[in-house]
Image (tube, rainbow, N blue to C red; front, side, top):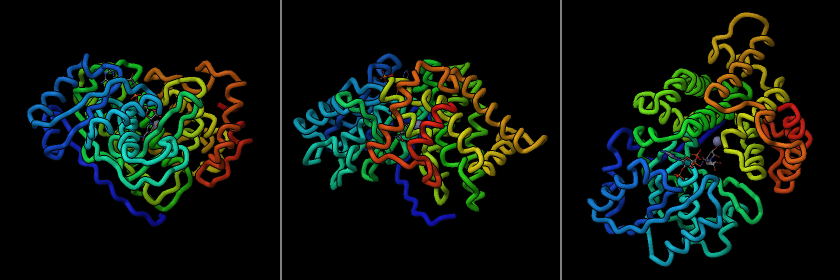
Amino acid sequence: MDNFVFHNPVKILFGKGQIASIGKEIPKGSRVLFAFGGGSIKANGVHAQVVAALNTAGLAFVEFAGIEPNPRFETLMTAVDLARAEKLDFILAVGGGSVVDGCKFIAAAISYDGDCWDIPARRARINTTIPMGAVLTLPATGSEMNAFSVISREATGEKLGWGHPGVMPRFSVLDPETTFSLPARQVGNGIVDAFVHVLEQYLTFPANAPLQDRLAESVLSTLVEIAPQAMEIPADYQARANLMWCATMALNGLIGQGVPQDWTTHMIGHELTALTGIDHARTLAAVWPGVVAVKREAKRDKLAQYAARVWGLNDGTEDSRIDRAIAATRAFFQSVGVPSGLAGYDITAEMAAKVPQRLSERGGLPLGEKGDIDAATVQHILDAA
Ligand code: NZQ
Ligand code: ZN
């Protein structure tokens, strides 16, 4: 196991009714930017609950609506202008990963002196951030309990990840009831995103970290167990509660401490979303089979462990167990409505061919737990996918 420093200060308020408590978590006298997406929170009553909580606490707030999926720099800069003009000093993100990620950017950009695109594009030095909190309505990204954010720029067709400890939410409300209104497509996306987050921190090579392995396997097994109910019965509180906690645990840092990680599927996926607009999780299901096909030998030990412990595959040759585990994973994605493999999507070979070039132009290569995935290997992965 490698050395690590782990510090996750995000306070989680989990369970039904917790939105009512947010007033206690925001410092008195704060002027709040209440930011959200395209309107789902108005339809499902979450907006009204947030307004009631802010009013009860006597907090002044200004609303900003319209943070879109794959939040755009252009939209977020209008929120930054608003926050600067209104002298807002606390940000409340209410929505899915896109709203939370967008608010992290706003939190860093408000007092940034310079071109704010440098924050994701050049990992600009950030000296001051505005504190933020979140009310999560879509279990998927883990953004509610981590320091990462992914921002897109319409003008250049880019989608870039960045992070800073100062933008970790001070608190995040995880109320499973807020997810009852999710369309099935978003529930399936969330399950796949969380599952692949775990795989990218787990399917590498053995690192003498049996606890991290078993934590990862427990999140994967729990997702497999609860997915049918979470998909079929929107108001199944227990299934949604377990899904929500799995998605948070998948990317709050805990399972990945001290172990090798491989974010190849995500990095290629972000390029595909930037090029085609395909939902984040769907790009992961599209690309992942290519990664395990091309890096099968490097990942062999962990693939065999995954087959045995997550899918209970103990008979037959090692190769057949690995084949069946990969097939089971793909069938699992399919079972939640997310096609696996590039063929399931409208992605031309021409489009896919732009991915290695874009990654390499930006200095995003090499990828992989051993740093051996270059532009040619990215192309092999896309061909295999
Ligand atoms: O905009 P509204 O009207 O709210 O509708 C949203 C949106 O259309 C809707 N939705 C959210 N909660 C709902 C709801 N509809 C009904 N009921 C509810 N309770 O769902 C749609 C998708 O929302 P979005 O926030 O885009 O989805 P998700 O949470 O999957 O976030 C995806 C974004 O997060 C990034 C992705 O790249 C993508 O930009 N990621 C962030 C990560 C991080 N910060 O750690 C890691 C991830 O790997 C990922 O890259
Ligand atoms: Zn993801």
